[in-house]
Image (cartoon, rainbow, N blue to C red):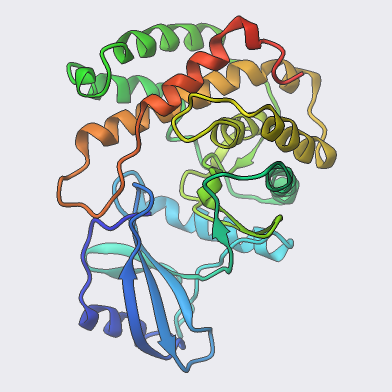
Amino acid sequence: MAVYTHVSAEMMARFLDAYDTGELISFKGIAEGVENSNFLVETRGGSDGHRFILTLYEKRVDPADLPFFMALLDHLADRGCRVPRAIADRQGVQIKDLAGRRACLIEFLEGISLSTPSPAQALAAGTALAQLHKAVADFAGSRPNSMGLSAWYDLAERCAGQWQQIDPALERIVTNELDFLQAHWPGDLPQSVIHADLFPDNVLMLGDEVSGLIDFYFSCTDARAYDLAITHSAWCFDGDGRNFDAGLSAALLKGYRDRLQLTAAEQAALPILARGAALRFTLSRAYDWINTPSDALVTRKDPMAFARRLMFYADRANADLFA
């Protein structure tokens, strides 16, 4: 989450007039994340609640994909997954316009995002991810992965000549890993709609229980085990990627496997998928590091935190990590 597009109080109040949410009391921008403009909105009266997240879609989110995302959230919520639905206005419309952007008013879920999860919380996150994968088994929608292997080459090209802004070693790391993954990326794995971005800050917790999964705007159809690898890379290291936590890893994998058994092919592919996950976020962070506007209310994230994860996964001493 972030704020790229500024919204006045008058614009916000007019926008809310179409909903049964009551009178606007306050709103403020949310600085975390890098993809969209987000605001915490509070209202008084109305029938739909009193706190909401207003999202304006920026950058990588194609407005044509929004109906897929909203249908996915409705489907998951109908099957008991703790996800926020988009609020419909009085005409039944979920996707609207505000400040020149497509916009949605989203349910507010109680809970906190973690920076240092415990093994018990990692266990719960693994369970929630497996539940998500089971819940989408009968979901009719599909969406290609816009951040797959071909996109990694595009991101690398867009960073060409600018790697020194981040780290002198990063260009070599990226070039070598792209060549390796192009040659070894697994095929024919079980496919599913996946979250594709299940970082700790996209999992809301109340104690050791998951109270919400949020930020589905990279969701797509891809290898189910790749989603687990992404989540592993996001949860099982400290913030700068220097230290791996074996306890978090064991708990996350147990939470997932207790609810959804991996196939032999998925199990064998996890080390390669984890390298791909680490490279994907190295590249997207590098691009954002170089291209984020200086006046944006957004927290830039260090690409080297995932480059270090990548080197950890690529180290043969860690080959049995997922066993």
